[in-house]
Length: 297
Image (cartoon, rainbow, N blue to C red; front, side, top):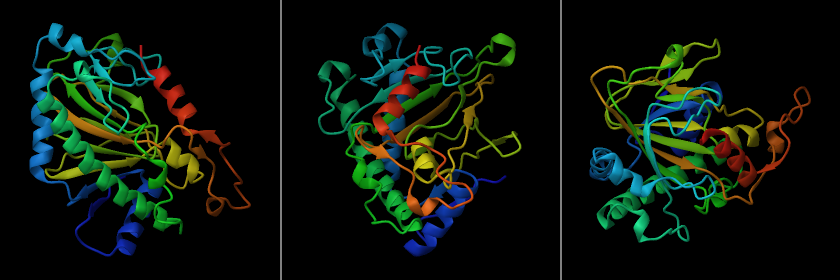
């Protein structure tokens, strides 16, 4: 299995939609170049991320993650296990909510510069994600805002991730940088600093490395898009290897999830007589709540 590489600066919307349909239908992942986000905005979010994670533990613990319903704040190594029943992940994270109405107070932010940088990056990512969702709607001959209209922002999250180098793996090698999991919502945009480690599980159960290509964004579809399309768009399991060597790994993930009241029902055009409807209806909020509760210790 290879991860499709798509250049968003070439081809018509119809051509890009066809490439996206293949990538998400066969793999569930794609690497995109020329997505339209300025390099300096991406560089800035990685800069504030590294500055935060380099601070001492006492400082970072001022911004601790409190609960899954709030879904905001810092978590240290081992505080989250994306693969339930396995040891905690060998990573640090800072989950941010930046949509209108999600303000949790100035004391939850390390600085105004940090917040401003995150907001700029969030806005750019939302614009890019909206373009992708319009292409997804085109694939299924839906109104172009069918998916994007469900994303008011209440469940959209920006997550800074740090995988410290030199980790000692416990429990017989079962501890990972990020345990095997699928993402929860419509789609995820992942920006990588250049150090690899992300792997995708193929149809044979083998783990395939995802290359870290300069200037690119890794995009994958999540569980709710999988349900909406009756499995036509895959929600593919992936993980991050532990950083046992001499390099740190930084990444930034932008999770695009529908608003909580959105009812996810299989699209009629994704049902045929042989397979029927595979997934019962569920609200986005209930699905996300269940997933978050399973992964946070």
